[in-house]
Image 1: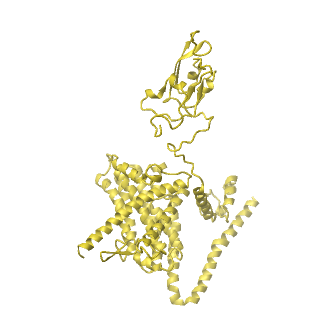
Image 2: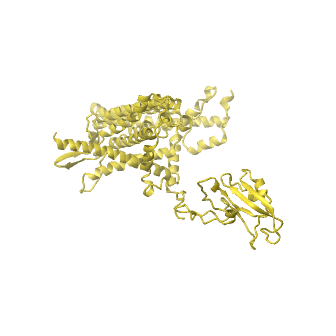
Image 3: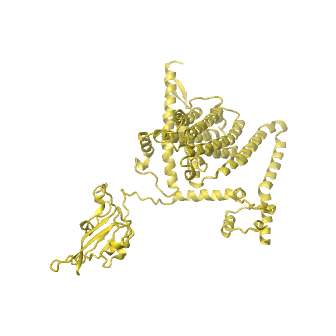
Amino acid sequence: MDWLDWVLLVARVVVVFVGLLLMVVVVIWVERKVIADMQTRTGPMRAGPHGVLQTIADGLKLFFKEGITPTLVDRPVYLIAPFVAILPAFLAFAVIPFGTSVTLFGRRVSFQLADLNIGILWVLAMASLSVYAIVFAGWSSGSNYPLLGSIRSTAQMISYEVGMGLALVAVIMYSGSLSMSGIVESQARVWNAIPQFPAFVIYLIAGLAETNRPPFDLAEAESELVAGFHTEYSGMRFAMFYLGEYVNMVTVAAIATTLFLGGWRGPHPSFLIWLWPVLWFLLKVFVIVYVYVWVRATLPRVRYDRLMAFGWKFLIPVGLLWVLATGAVIVLPDVYGRRAIMIGGAVAAAVLLVVTLVWPLLTSNDRRAREVAS
Amino acid sequence: MSDEERPEPDGLAADEQDIGGPDVVGDEQDMGGPQVVGDEQRRHPGAIAAMAKGFATVFKQVFREDVTEQYPHEIVQPPPRSHIGRHLLNKHENGLEKCIGCELCAYACPADAIWVEGADNEPEHPVSPGERYAKNYQINYLRCIMCGLCVEACPTRALTLTSYYEMSWTTREDAIYTKEQLLEPPLPLGTTPGTEEG
């Protein structure tokens, strides 16, 4: 590597970092606008045309606000927590390919910071690390509500990480690669979202829980916990938590795009070849962000025990079954031949159909009859 | 035991039928004992249909017109007969004030916002028809709650409410409107000094 490589590397890091910050600014604005649209409001309108600069105004305001440090906090941990919150969020984005590559100064520059051969594991590792920010913040605040909020949040994130991991395992098996760019390659013919639809849904739901977004935002249930783990934070430090939350959301959407929606792939004209994949990627990310905002506008916050029950008793079993099914689809044809598998699949589908559709009908008839009798 | 035969409230039963799909709520009721319906209810087969309905309902709002008013930029006039804002002391057509200084408005005011000092009219230069007039009349808008009881109390219809709501002050004294101010009809909305257009 000579100096030009270093310059390009640093430039890429800066571009991704700044780009992610800009994404967050836009995503927050989009969220406010979309949710306003769904409530027949207009949302922010005053800062810049249609309020695009509202996020920047809010950020500046937070920047100049006084950062209050309560007396009872455990100072070092309290001060570190906001940084721990944003760091993994940014780091997770490093492995996401958001375009193909471009030739600059005779060198190939790819639109991916690091094409790790264990890309997905990196993502999972970073997702796990972000729990620490919440634990640190909740514990060090020296106050009841943050502690309760952080306990909730931690349990929730650990639980849903399992479901998320299972969804990712299915994708890894199906694509036969752990690297993000490899998974995008494997989706050249059909997006994973179609053959891996259950995994896609599991991932989206677990992603909601991982980012602490409604309807899984129990950690911040204002009616019971003030603001959850960041109750005692103000000014810049609060802004950092907020930033981390939204970077996380962008990252989750970007991972969903990469793993299930074909990443940067999409039809494009033959000029400006490097640009279209980036636009496709952004479009897909925003589609997922839109869905998340839609979910937020629709569903009420779930009760805590139901959240856990849903994670452990529904998402994880379904995820396990789906991993099993994916494995069966991959391995069995080689062992028994296609024909036997087709028959077996048909039988399994029929059994499933009976179990899911016919059986409840019978039982509910029972009940209706009882009701009539009484 | 009585819990087994617990009747469902009518509204709930109707809702469940609306959701559609087979219904397995309360299948285990034969086992007796007090039933916790909540968790089973959530997982009945209609749940997904119900959620889809909810998502559709929310999405439909996207195509409805926004209700937000862009206030300082576009001022939507309140209905002409609305009485949502500042008071106005009315006059007769011959220029005499309707107010007779009876203080009933001040008496009716639950927030103690009105101050009236009555005085005898000078027969040569009457301010109002009849014996008495209001020598001093003040409304403190930091106290006023816009309930309109004063207007109801007024025997001569001297005091009415207007639809003028652009009131802001920088001192407490400015919030107390004097008789002279209250006699003036309010400016059109959006033209008050200090607003962007005014």
